[in-house]
Image 1 (cartoon, rainbow, N blue to C red):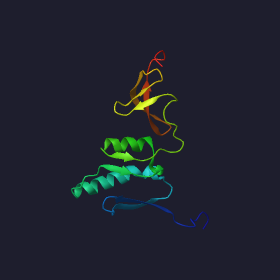
Image 2: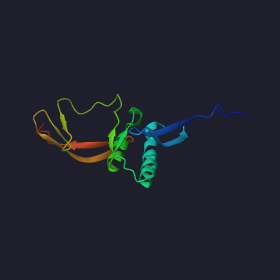
Image 3: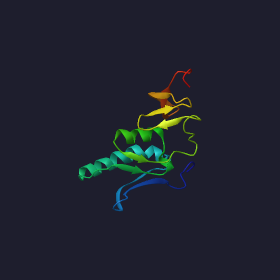
Length: 137
């Protein structure tokens, strides 16, 4: 048969309770997806499983493959503190600006606040937009 698949490929995802070294979830996905595309389903499944068992899930630790703005937002919405490093392509904020996490704003080199205005979906990535007057910074 022409176009017959030569092999079957799957992407397995495994979650572990790192405190107790217990597998909390495992699932095989089609291999055409990326790790970061699987995280929403993983979060939904694990959160439900732990809730049904009367357990609380507070932190999510994962490698860079799970890094995306959408995933950071999802984990925040679900009340999970994430420890997922950004991709090596992430450049951070503008040069000379300092991010103040407690207030969710930036300080420009003139020590003026650059405040959060909205989130915007750009090229499939959720981005936070901050604004200030040009004359301030």
